[in-house]
Image (cartoon, rainbow, N blue to C red; front, side, top):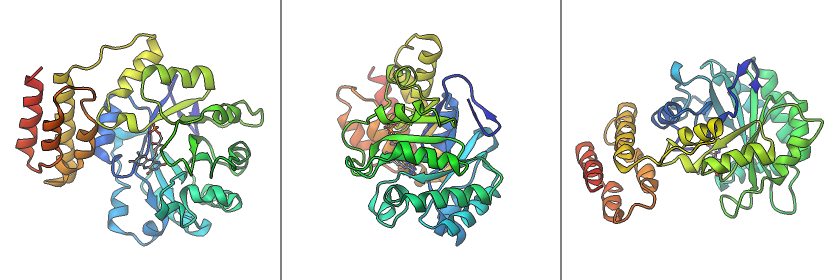
Length: 323
Ligand SMILES: Cc1cc2nc3c(=O)[nH]c(=O)nc-3n(C[C@H](O)[C@H](O)[C@H](O)COP(=O)(O)O)c2cc1C
């Protein structure tokens, strides 16, 4: 499978863009465990053209992260084209357009998934961005606005027609936000459409090697993207890829191994964000880590409230020594 001139291995597994999660230390862990494509957090086109510091920081990319996609969002074709040119100077391998964010402050302003209610503007934005840069442009969207309006099959064709080079589909509507189950049947329909030739990346609820395999086998997608299941467990990429390539399940990482991984992540996070930001960043990970581990509640509460690095490491080590 190729996007532009970037060639991916068999069964590509991408690390989903996630605001407040997909910063360099998280991406480092995803890459370490085999994610085939990394994305930045989404960057607002308005903020990009005004050079807002916090947004510009999202564009930092390290050479080892390639292939790397920077994702942008906005509601205006002209601004998005200008923002894409700003982004292009940072030399990502791909520029991805977010047509899927459901949150009110984005979708409510006609950006992200809001564009699923204004397909002509979505297509105009896609075309403007494609025309503005010499980098492959991809898009990420949902099935539609709500259960009564799911135009993804038609939208996919139109995006392809204006030069979008790959399309990620999250099998939910905007109305669903992150609730209910992802419906992959329309993803399969897009993939089976004889008019479609660009790669289709399936996304939504993949949280095990078996589900990853099902996405390829039953829905025929060219690649898959994993988001929430990697929070607190970025080694899911290792587990999934091993299974896809060998048909064998790797033994689950034991607590000591998980602690070692999270400590490595914590130190990387501190390296990137300093103190106490690097420790605080980890709270979202600790909230999800050590799933199913008995008697972990109290340690979790401590991990979610501490800001001191040594204390946090000590809590993790104590956790490991209990097992
Ligand atoms: C905390 C969080 C932040 C997210 N931020 C973004 C984002 O910036 N851009 C984007 O396209 N999708 C974003 N998403 C959506 C994910 O990329 C993905 O489409 C969604 O979580 C479904 O995949 P999953 O079931 O594997 O998590 C975000 C999701 C979460 C949970």
